[in-house]
Amino acid sequence: MITFPCAKINLGLNVVARRPDGYHDIETVFYPIPLHDALEIKLMDDRFPSESACDLKVTGNALDCIESDNIVVRAYDIIAADFKIPRVHAHLYKRIPSQAGLGGGSSDAAYMIRLLDERFRLNIGNAEMERYAARLGADCAFFITAETAYATGIGDVLSPADSPKGNLVGYHLVVVKPGVAVSTREAYARITPRHPAKCCRDVVRQPIDTWRDELTNDFETPVFEAHPELGDIKRRLYEAGAAYAQMSGSGSALFGIFADAPRDMKALFDGCEVFEMKL
Image (cartoon, rainbow, N blue to C red; front, side):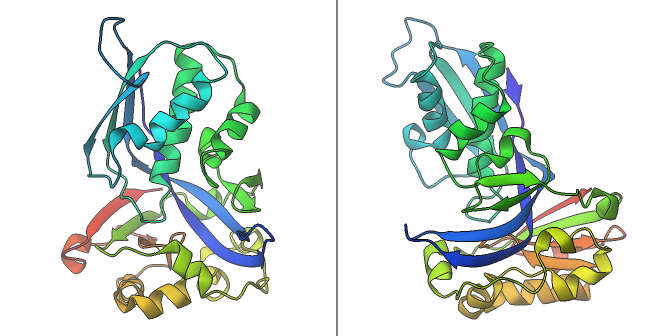
C-alpha cells in the first residue's frame, strides 16, 4: 500500500509568547501544497532477519539520519506500542527538501500513522491519530488531515481556518530551496515575541494583494540577517511578478505565489532546488 505525504507552507508566522517550558507560542496558517514524497509499506516475511519491526529504506533526497532513527520508524513504533500490527518493510522516496520549513519529515510521520491505520483497519479516528502525531513533532498533527488550519500553541493546536483557497485557486506556486541550513534554535533566540497588528488567520481571508503589507513571518528578519541570500531570493520572487512571497516556517525555502505561470524560474534561481506547481 502506498501514500503520498504532502508538503506545507506557512501563510504568515508570528511568534507571540515565550513559554515556561522554553518553547514558544506561535500563530500561523498551515497550507498544504502539491509537493509530495512517496511512502509504501509491505508485510515483512516472518523469516526476514530484521532488528526493527519497521525495516525502512530511504531513496531520493539524502537525509541526515540513519534509517532506523527516521521519524517514520518512530511513527510505526508508537502505533505498535498500542496495537498488534505485523512487521513491515517501508520504502520512503524523499522529494520534499529537508530543513526547508516545508514539513516533509512531519508529513512522512503523519502519513505513516494514516497508512498503518488504513492497512491494518485499526479504526483509530482522526482525533486520536492527531494525538499520536503530536507526540512526534509540533506540526505533525496537521498532516493527519492535511487541510488548511490555523495553528497556535507550538503549532500543535489546530482549529479550522477559512481556507484562502478562494483567493489562491488558479494561482501558481514557486518554491525555491537554496543550499542553506538554517538553525531554528538560533532563529528563535533572536526573536522578541509579540502579537502582530492583525492575526494571520484574518489576513489570509483578504485578497492576496493585501498580503504583502500585512502577512508577516517573524523569522525573516533574523534569518535574512544571518543569510542575506535568502532575502535576495524573496526580492527576486517579487521582481519576477509574485503577488506574494515569504519564507516558509523558519526556512530555508521561500515561496512565491503568482497569478500567471512564471517563466524561467530554474534559470533565475540557478543552483537552487526549484519546484513549480498550480494551486
